[in-house]
Image 1: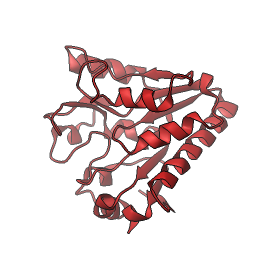
Image 2: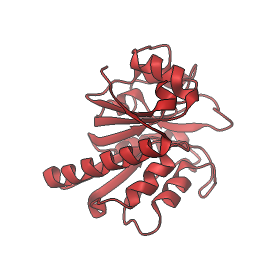
Image 3: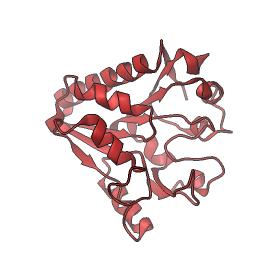
Image 4: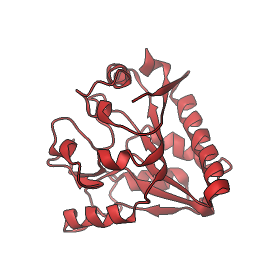
Length: 221
């Protein structure tokens, strides 16, 4: 897959560029189709992007936000990506968020239900990149990497202490744009491998119609 790479000076500049790209995509989608759908990943890197997005010109009433992945933890737990997404956006943003139902007892049924909520095509899917080459919660050596018959799945084992619910490769392919936000020196090697199309890391196996990588100079080397 071809990736368009844009280099920014630092993590703050990359986050702001990502926020501006999402805001522009939202305005274009609402003008063209009346609605905008965004799926967002977890991790610390996007928190600044969400905060910047809250200050930009976004037609929030026509925006729906989905989760790319989530830790299996109780509602309100600080480990939950949802908590930090809502905190970063702030209470002033009137947006509809579709949380992954990770507090359900039957996680397999919850994943199927969430898959049914996803639009046929997402406008933008935001992804990050881990030092180990994971993206979403598609983590090295986990059975979830082989799931090709479902849009949403639960990891086969714990990753960094928790099970995860995640969009699968087929789900990540159903977007008009993949927007990667990659910052930090520890991302340098996995970014190089991803851009080279290295299927030896999970991120290198993602396929979609278009891919924009916003990286700071520390990550790009």
